[in-house]
Amino acid sequence: MIFFLLPLCVYSWNYQQNGEDWEGTCATGSEQSPINIDQGDTSKLGDTYSMLVYYYGIVGSRTVVNDGNTISLPGDYGYITITDQKGNDRKFLTDHIEFHMPSEHWFDGYPSQMEVQVFHTIDDSDYTAGFPSKAVVSIMIRPGDDNYFMAAISLSKLPASGSNYTLAATSLVNLLDICDPYDNYYFYHGSLNKPDCNETYLWYVFETEQMVSFAQMNYFSLLWVEDTSFSEGKGNIRETQRLHGRTVYYSSASSLALSLLWFFWS
Image (spheres, rainbow, N blue to C red):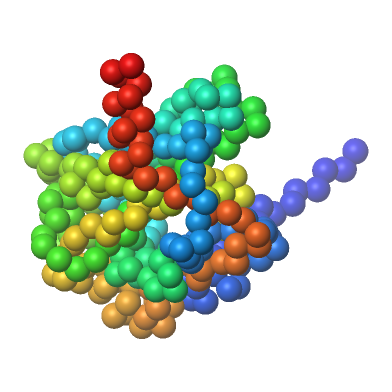
């Protein structure tokens, strides 16, 4: 018997063409991310797929990673719950945080200055059949005051491509400094926003932009925008994708709060 050793082919990708050259499902899929959200053309989100945020406050030291395409912060920052079709709350643990400049998602045809994406993986594996196991919470960023979350990750020491940096033990990283868990949000069925573009992701895009100073944004701009060798200065983003008939849903935090009050007082 003759055995043939086949080379392991790893699909290498980058943002040089902002995703237009990506292969496989990235090119042929019908539920791809990111998207442009038409804020005047959404449906009301019911109980199914509704989401609640349970992020921690301050956490200890974290590692900041530059994989050549984005900056990420792996680690446990808390969790979200998502209600399934049977009314059960599925728990999704944080996996890592990513940064994109400009934003990948658009509102009404326009991007925001930046986007922070919190990736999650389902925890209660006994109940994953027929329900997605990945979810992303997305936070849009605009210029404003200094942000404590950004300050805590030592932006002046952002690692170069292919390297990482461990924050000091005294660093006070608090995801809630840049995420309002009570904000309204948009929801849609989408994909991983990079190869292999797997279409099993639930996306939750908060409506309100959070403030980060120009000085803090500039550290990311130096990596992905002002360095024209990186996607010709267009940033570490994938272009928005067609909806292909998908529905974008809207969830009002005020409606949720009233529902919770009614539940606890009834």
